[in-house]
Picture (cartoon, rainbow, N blue to C red):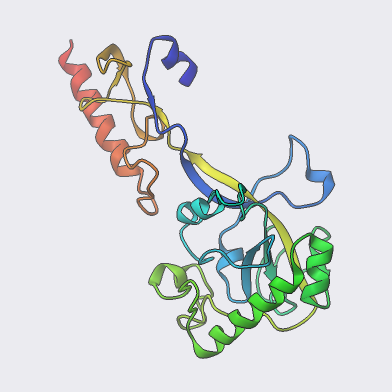
Length: 261
């Protein structure tokens, strides 16, 4: 669709953005090819007893944020050291998690998946998985202290309704999403930056007509919904937030086309 629009001179917009998502490629080498399964990460990171850390073993975000906002944290660029400090990153949990909750393709109560790195200490876990284990130990100590007092002072995880919605519904806030990581063996899964969908495409005017690079409408060509340059830019309008704009621009396109005879 983009190629066809470009061939008739369509102006494109928002092409550097997407609906960002945390994801796992099931870290075994067997899945590291073009056919690798894409596994979105949602409840796995928001249930109590998990955190996400970068290669320094440090948390870098409220793990229970909406997927798009969290995705921007993955693409944060540190110009001082010229790197993306939060790529790659790891999902961390302990022995208490798997008996109670699913972990991607592994259901609650299943054995520890073969694509999970495990160790008896945080330092050993970091050495085996490829991140700073001492940094993780310090991070977990701080996180556990915050859990015990009932507030994540570092990132505010569990402070709002959305955070707790994706947590354990059997537990009260903030413990629906906050839980200590204190029981070995400890586990790590290497994570990737992913997308839930695109939000770039042809730009449109007030009648949903695709416009060219001069801002003039291209006769007979309309666009709406996720095929167009996203009307919210890089922002996330919440669950189903693209449905309203899609319906609106679809209506505008139909109304304008009908008037053309």
